[in-house]
Amino acid sequence: DAKTTQPPSMDCAEGRAANLPCNHSTISGNEYVYWYRQIHSQGPQYIIHGLKNNETNEMASLIITEDRKSSTLILPHATLRDTAVYYCIVRLYSGGGADGLTFGKGTHLIIQP
Amino acid sequence: DAGITQSPRYKITETGRQVTLMCHQTWSHSYMFWYRQDLGHGLRLIYYSAAADITDKGEVPDGYVVSRSKTENFPLTLESATRSQTSVYFCASSDWGTDTQYFGPGTRLTVL
Image (cartoon, rainbow over all chains, first blue to last red; front, top):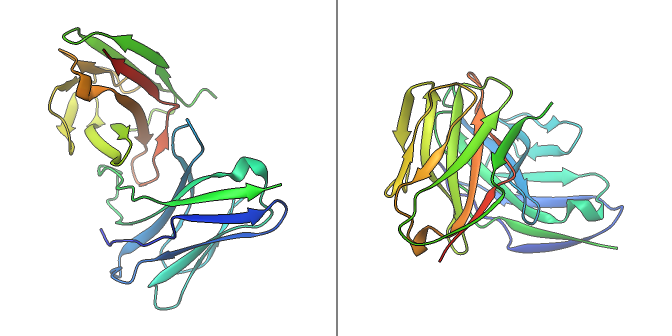
C-alpha cells in the first residue's frame, strides 16, 4: 500500500468547512483512497473512499487530484462532534476485505467553538 | 440495528490469567478482524477471519488465540495474559466484495 502524509493537527471553526489534506504521491493506478476517523475512546469510523472521481456522501466529500497524488477530505459544516483523528489510507482493493488496514498517525482535527 | 458489539468494554486481569474478549456482529459479514491500539503504534492487526472456521495471523499474533465457529462471533483469547498485552482491542468486520471495515467500540484491557 502506498504511503500517506498528513499534517499532525489542524484547527477549524465550528460551522465552517474543514479541509483535511493527504499526500499519496506513490499511489498506483488500482489503489483506492480511504478515510476513517477516530473520535476519542471510540472505534475507528469509516467516512468515505474513492479511486479517481470525486465522491460525496452524507458525511463528507472526497476530492482527488487528477494525478491522484493527493486528496482532500471536506467536512462541509464542521461541528464540535467532528473533533477526532482523521486517517487517510491508500490500499489496493482486495475484493473481499481480507487485509487489515494500516493506520498512520493521521490528522488531529480540533473544531473550535 | 446493533451492528458490531464488543464485551466486556473494560477488563482488569492479572498476569498469567486467561481472558477472552468477545466480538459479535449482526450483519453476517464474511470478514472479521482483531486489532490492538497502543500509544505510539497505532492500530495493529492481530488476527483476521475470512469466514467461519477460517482464520489467519496478522501482524502481531503471538500470545493470542482466535476461533470462529459461527459467522457472527469472533472471540479473542489471551491464554496467559502478560503486561505487554495491556491495550485497547478493537474488533472489525467487512463484507464480501467491499474493503470497508466497520469497527466495534473497543475493549480496554489492563493486565496487572
